[in-house]
Image (cartoon, rainbow, N blue to C red; front, top):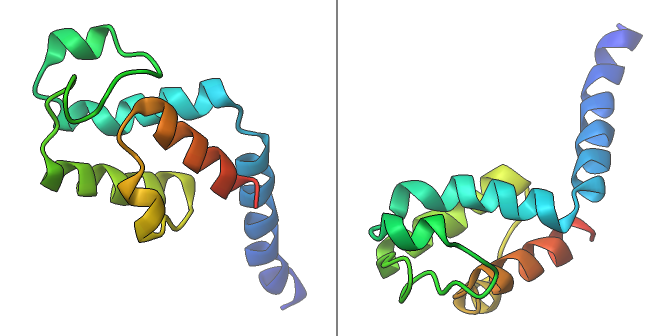
Length: 104
């Protein structure tokens, strides 16, 4: 019985530690995976950088931008408020917001 009660605590602590240790490079890598299915300009995606604009450069439509935000919330185990979501227009913006939320 005691072991069964400890298992959820272990996973909760382990997830928190994993999130906290994620560096900017790892966040960018995971974000690339999240963004890729929604990209309309694959050539621009091959040249993605922190300055890449999700809507203008990658041709992600606004509905898919919402999907990217939801997928990021799930992948990084965070909750992105509406104000932050509206600011996630470039890769750099998205990474900065995710960084701030995973270290809280």
